[in-house]
Amino acid sequence: MRTVYLALLSMLALPAAAQSPAFSVDTSTVALYTFDGANPDTTFDLSGNDLHAFNDGTTSVPGRYGSAREFDGVDDRIDMDAVRVALQGSSAWTLEYIAAATTDVWIPVLLTHTCGNGWWLYAGGTSARYAAKTTASGGCNWSPDQTLTIPDIGTDWHYFALAFGGGLLSFYIDGHPVESLPASGVFQGGGGQRAWIGHSDSGDGFYYSGLADELRVSDVARSAGEICMTANDLGWPCAVTADEPGAEREAGTLYPATPNPFADRTTLAFALPEAGRVTVAVYDVLGRAVAVLADGERAAGRYEVALDGRGLPSGVYLVRMTAEGFAETRRVTLLR
Image (cartoon, rainbow, N blue to C red; front, top):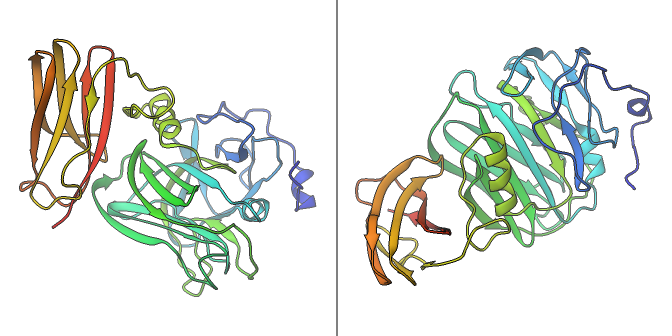
C-alpha cells in the first residue's frame, strides 16, 4: 500500500463532474491526471492514491479528451511533487503523457531536478529530449540524456511515453518506439527541488508553454506492446510487433535488417509458408509511410527487399510486414 505523504492532499474530494479518463487505472497506476474538473487550483489524481497536484496559473481549455490545461510559458506550472515522493525506491516507472505545443516550440515539460532522482520529457517543433536521474547516475547527473531530431512534431496532439526498467530507458511517440538507451539504478535521493509540469526550478527557473491533456504515472516499465496497444485505443494507429503480447503471428517471418544501423542501404528478408498477398512498408516514428518495399501476391518462399535511405533524413524507421493472418515490425536506424 502506498503511503500518502501530503496530509493536506488526502482532505480534498474529487469533483463530481470529472470526466472519464482516456487512460485506464490498473494496479500499477501511481497517479492519473485528466486535468478535468471545476476546481482551478487542483489537478485531481483519479488513481485512488490521492496524489493530487496543484495548479499555479494554468487555464482550463478544450483538450483532445475532455478538458486540458494551457501553460503560457511565462509563470504557469503544476506541482506534481507527490508523485516524485511516491516513486522513491522504485526500480521501474512509466510516464504516459498526452500533450501538444501551442507555438511549435515545446510541450509543457515533465521535469524534476532533484539530485539523485528525476525525469525529463521535452518535445516540440522538430526535436525531443528525454533523460533520467537515478542512484546509478551519480550526484545530479542525467544518465542517459538524449536529444533527438524528429520531424514535424509541430502543434498536433501526441501521446508520449517514457519507460524505465529492465536496464533501459525507452522513449515512444504515438505508440512507436523512438529509442532505448541503457539505464539502471532506483528512483531515490535527496535535494530541495520539486517535480513540476511546465517548469524547471533548478537554476534557470524556466517555464514551458503548451497544452497538457492527460498524464498517467505507473510503477512498472510498460512494454512496447502495451504502449502500442494503448496508442491504438487512444486513436493513434500503431502496429504491435509479433514478439509482443497481443500481436498476431500465424504465418510468415520478417528477418532483422542487415546492416543495422545503416548509412545508405540495408536489406531485409521475409518468408511466406504459403502463397498470398504481402506488403512490406516503411514508416517514420510518427507513423507516416515513407516507402513501400513489397506489395502484391507472392508464392511461398524466402525473399529479400532493400531499403534505400539516401533520400531520407537520419533517424529511426519502422519496417512493417503484413500478410494473411500475420503482422510483424522491425526497427531500423539510418545514420550518416
